[in-house]
Length: 326
Ligand SMILES: Nc1ncnc2c1ncn2[C@@H]1O[C@H](COP(=O)(O)OP(=O)(O)OP(=O)(O)O)[C@@H](O)[C@H]1O
Image 1 (cartoon, rainbow, N blue to C red):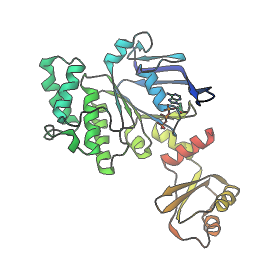
Image 2: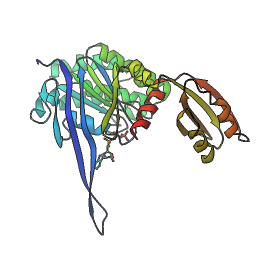
Image 3: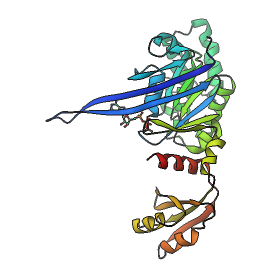
Image 4: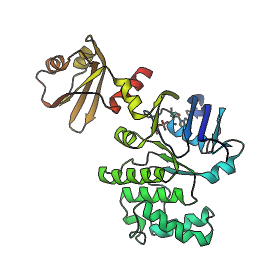
């Protein structure tokens, strides 16, 4: 195969052209990916992180030959994604989160048999391969049950087994843990880690920072169609060095309080996130500035939950990187 990299993306760009409106149709163009370059080593577990609409799925589809780049080039296992589509497809698997793509009324085993046929796995290898994969994804013993009775996490693991039937060198995992409960998500992470440890290159997109932190060798943070930061989780975490984070749970954070805090000297970012009945207010400041008193003053009279002042995490670094790009 020659190439030292499993994936090489070189100034990839992709523009979507769409027609919107019915009475007066208008042509619009969205530049979803604008000059993305990175490499992924063989056996590496590489994460693509970014807000909604950042261009993660588009990047994956350019690499797995489902979309043609508007410009730029990419190679997977040394093969050009545009000119050597078949060779690329033989070496990759693609798994996306959600419910599509499995036959609910068949058992897990019959699903895998069906897809093994479809992917051209030689009949004499099918049995062994399916048994290995059921083991890898932790479904051995449950394979004769119908998929309609599977939990979300089990379905997701069956999806991964399906994506691995033809023993691909590279697996694209697009938001595998979406809608999966925390315990099942942990099992799923173990499966992905085992897979990478066994030598499969994994390109993973996720919105869960803890997942990326635990699993990925390196992470690219993508926003607005370009890579904003790339490095190991600890390298990225350093992007938040020199910061301190105050977090307050509150029942109804007024916009006036948020803008007053944002204008304080030493405050770098503020964010409010809905958490069921309450909201989580996060204030990033320079490490030597203590804003906790100011935060409590601005929220005087409002019912509060937990108040916390802490060191930054990977998620805080991510917020810093993405906010700087906005
Ligand atoms: N088929 C399409 N036609 C037109 N625009 C599209 C199409 N697919 C995606 N887009 C746009 O391209 C941009 C990037 O989308 P993409 O799905 O790659 O983002 P993403 O990072 O995967 O987002 P998410 O985290 O929400 O899945 C968005 O602005 C999106 O609206």
